[in-house]
Length: 439
Image 1 (tube, rainbow, N blue to C red):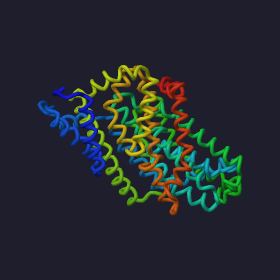
Image 2 (cartoon, rainbow, N blue to C red):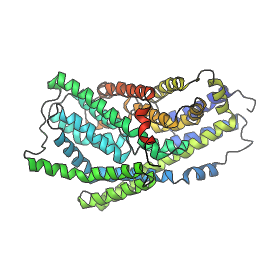
Image 3 (cartoon, one colour):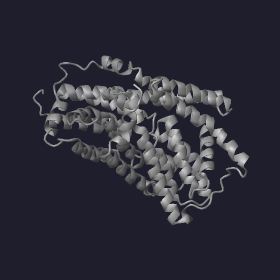
């Protein structure tokens, strides 16, 4: 390997990448630049990386076409008023449950997650709608933060998940099965968070006083509110149902969802032409950034393979990573710690070139691995100092400090870790649904 030990080579490329990231360079540029400089330094540029071919082969993918479509779907929904309709409808259903606003946040977040595939988009929408109401009603701030952060954590897990989509494309797995693998764990996590909030408010009712939110005083008013959220539920059912039954691929389902969101937005008169253009512009920015990271990750992976680092890591790990259990512990430690400092999707692509070969080496089910991976990178969204969901909540709650928000969200961190252990011990939680799918 160019006369250099694999461990020294690994340290060099990690140091190069860390310097560029700490300097504020874009993740995609940092991945490509560190790869090129690394190969020049260790003498591996005798066979130059075919950067153009890597970019073309990576992006010329039918699966990745779903990325901008799902992002566009979420952007349109955020601007069309559908979020408020969903929240109001779920609040009608849960109006008699102690701490109804808290549970409505979790329920609405779950539905929004099935539309946007993004934790930050889900948390931002719910924070704008729910936090002001909970503050007016005198809800305990920590529980309010826990419900928003917990709801946001569903964004990456409940399908369609952008993280699962990108992982599936990178690992060459069935994205449809990955989506379904995240559905039941997402529902379980929502129930766990709601259960925690229910116990807290039941033990101390003063933490969640009766809500003053207007949810209708008559049966007809409440029925009208429920009907108003029906189009959104139909859209979610259509997207997930076509994927599960095999009628549509994830890309085709994304197109259905994006078109349906636009149609609903105009029919409900909540979407203007300006909002539609703004949605398209926002989609172009987010999707471009994500897809450039995907290309950068492929270049980074090619550099690690060409230099022999991947072979060295697998050989050295064979004496330690002898079972899926050891890999599970290792990935939990690495992703929880690094997730505090690196954005979740960026962290995923930086580490996949190394962890995927290890996954295959210990015969770890790749779909189970994908669900656990999404759970672990989700932790980074709600842990300081980089947790984006915490900053989103802070922006919607002026005067609240990040430390205070994290203290409120900390029980959610524990619940996610507990769920990860349960899924590893009982894989059918994640695997039974994709195994029952139509082929």
